[in-house]
Amino acid sequence: MTMSRLVLSLICVAVLGGCGSAPVEHYYTLLGQPASVGGDQSGAMSRVTVTLASVTIPETVDRSELVLRSGANSVAVMDTHRWVESLKSEIPRAIANDLSRDLDGALVSVQADNASRDAKYQVYVDITRFDSVLNDAASIDAFWSVRLANGDQLRSDRVALRIPVHGAGLDELVAAHTQALAQLSEKIATQIREIDAGRH
Image (spheres, rainbow, N blue to C red):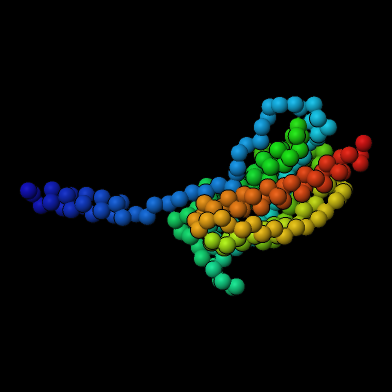
């Protein structure tokens, strides 16, 4: 074997060996089952339009890796466990998906999707806490307001949610966060129903 072929063979072995030892990455999503677009669309909410105008999240979790609370003042970043897209995109889509389910027949969109600013109701959500504790709980604290297209605020409220994790894995922890967002969306939907009923 010539020297050049020997060097090439050693490079190939090194590359293949490095690839074989690379850690496997895992990806997670907060999006549950999509809201059904079928069924009866003649309900009271069928002509209502809602836009998630703004959703903010803590900077501590605004990264691709999952961030776990490991102590009162410490966190652990899971390098090989990542969100399939940024939480700034995932969370608004999850809330919009849940609102679509809770507000039967209403058209719910996300501002990032070029949704119309003329939607009947504008929803602003400020998530101040998004804590993940393995084998314990997913916790979300949030403040929200419902406004008209002209900016007039109709209602606002806040909630602190803690969903126990049923299992020791990250899948169960992410599922608990999905459930927490669903509960948040349900509370927002209840307010929108009450507001809309009072305006007719």
